Amino acid sequence: MYSYYQVRTDNDLTLEYKLATHSVAQRWANKVSQLTVSDIRPDYQPIRGVGGSTVDSLLGELDSLITALNSWIPEPIVDRVDRSDLKASLNRLHIHFPTLEATERDPQRLGQLTRYNHLIHEIQYAVKPNPYILLDYDCTDYELLSGSDYELFSSTWKFGDLLLHYSQAGRHPLELMLSDDLHCPRDHIRPQSWFSANHTLRFFDCRVDRLRFSQFYHSSGYCWPYALDDPRLAIGYIPLGELVRLPGVTKADIAVKLIRSRAIVDFKVY
Image (cartoon, rainbow, N blue to C red):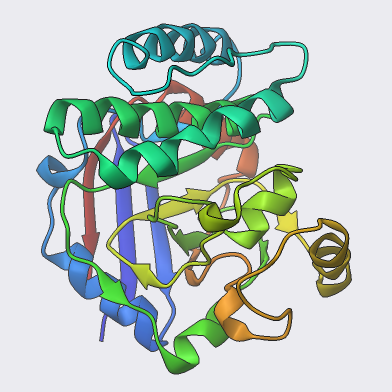
């Protein structure tokens, strides 16, 4: 059984986690044990949501990328980033990703689409700001969730929590609610049904109780793929571990180091 997970950044921020004992956490840890830092996708910044000048540079890159995409996609993206209403603007732009990604096979074009999707999510978190680390691997070791796995999903997490990442093309229920997205195409609503080694380390608190999500579920007007009480709706994320807090190290200390970090230089499960 794996008990701990450790991550280290390029400025010597070391984060250690006590892993959960449930089956998904252990299966996930086994996947991570077979990877190295060379397997992390090289085309994106893993440390996100730190705010500052990052937002302007990300918005500029997204505008430029839309121009590049419009040079080859069948129907050009008419919308552009609306800085006066970023949330709604990003929701509209995200609609294009699942549709285009589902049919494209050219590696270079798929790389552009992946970056397009990553930029939208990076901006969403950077605006608040809500810092997090996303370790997204250049691999295809996916595994289906089943049975009791769905009972593990939670819409609440605290500073430092280690969460399984949603690696599918589409939007999951909690993401729709947190983004105030009321215009997602029906076939883009895809609750999580499989997982990979991808995961996030969240350095902000989130609490969405049952009543709050229930209100969104009923008022959104969506035709949901599952009933509210069906675990397969997969509301939130599966928690994998908790941060081991070191004596004398505060949340502010971690946040400052995150802002100054640019890369993940090591990780391991043991």
